[in-house]
Length: 148
Image (cartoon, rainbow, N blue to C red; front, side, top):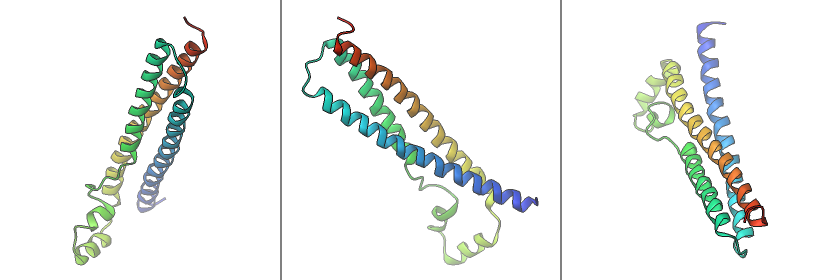
């Protein structure tokens, strides 16, 4: 494998990781939305004990924070200095010069940093969703009568 092939493979890998992160994030956004809708549907007309309301409220807060993290994970980075973001500020001649130069190593570094930010937000959101599921389960047990 030549150095150019290795750079091309690394560039493609980083772009694929960003796409995978965005896919996971979109699925989690749908999941969190469904959970919030389900909780609302079940809890809106029920008379719940105070303990269930407190624990359930903490779960909802966790889900809302996770939702924010997920939204920030898929938020476009328009200040990037690579790809089409850079091209939007250049003249046609500058775009042509940039395309003739091999800037993939610069792109790999920038995109890798972007992917890591997305992964950290996704990881935190998943942790919060897990905590919220535990809290919702606890609230359900309390509401059903597991704790007085």
